[in-house]
Amino acid sequence: MHDTPPAGSHPYDALTPDLILDAVEQSGLRCDGRLLALNSFENRVYQVGIEDGPPLVAKFYRPDRWPRAAILEEHAFALELAQAELPVVAPLRDEDIPGTPSRDEDISGAPVRKEDGPGGPLREDGTAAAPQTPAQGGTLREHRGFAFALYPRQRGRAPELEDRNTLTWMGRFIGRIHAIGALHPFQHRPELDVRTFGEEPAAFVLDQGFIPPDLRPAYETLVRQVLDQAGECFEQAGRVSHIRLHGDCHAGNVLWDEEGPHFVDLDDARSGPAAQDLWMLLSGERTAMEQQLGAVLRGYREFHDFNPRELHLIEALRTLRLIHYSGWLARRWADPTFPVNFPWFNTQRYWQDQILSLREQAALMQEPPLSPALDAP
Image (cartoon, rainbow, N blue to C red; front, side, top):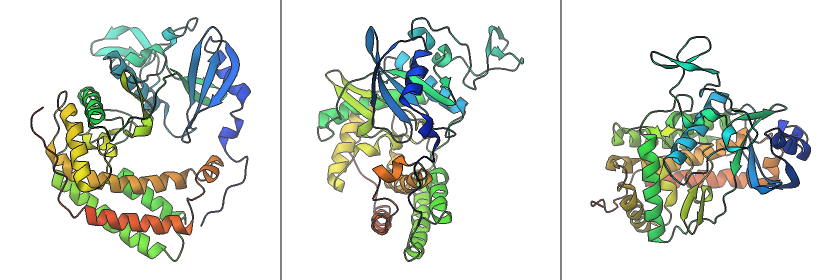
């Protein structure tokens, strides 16, 4: 198995407090010196104190993870949702920050002319630009090799998912997000499917030697079995629409206050089936999950149709997430932050537990799909 990497071996080592404050101040703001690291591992996120104003949140994107166009597309989606008065915490545009000049760009990052061509705005080389989006105020900034964005601070607590009214409330807002997400597709962000969330991460952990030799035959055989089963679940679901999703819609990415839920962190936004943004709200035994899903769908279907054939996908999506999560940890193991915060990964016990979890998922995918009450709202 892979050993813990040595300290000082990752690009984030250069992200010092001085660099963070300098990056924020280049946006025309004055920092008061207060800096608080927030809970984030994929990216680096900080609450930054601002003179004569409320603190802001600065998100520094992991180098070489997303191309610029994909990050801008995430921003455009968040701003599109916020413009529709959905409680999504969107990045600040240049015009939202006093003293910052506006930058015109399309979601590919290319400058856009003010005049329009026959099919819409043109880039400076005369080719057609992407349709205008709310992100064109300039949301992505760069400083000393780091891409970053600024966000307003949003207070809140985790939602109480054991409360049926909370689940219905969540369902309403997710339904509204999906109604907008279904209007047009992503152009630069990946799809969630068996290949991207299952086959590729499984191949990585196997090819890179993360599985202990004595467990490798069992894991390799089992992961092939569950990926075949997940593919069969997708076949049973039939022609399911792939829409723009939050992508990682668990309780940790929702902040709840007296006004209700506020959705944060669209970093994993991608195209996929609507069920991906619903199943992570479910937990417990089958009967409990059916009741929870019924509560979610009562709110969801007030704003967007739900295809009941997607019920075939819930355990398949849960299985893919298990495999994808292991692959994510393995791909990030060279980042010194990961061995410190995930010491249980890359151990004999971890892979034994993964094998047990995948066996449970193999059994669950053979059962009939959940049957929540799908009566009209």
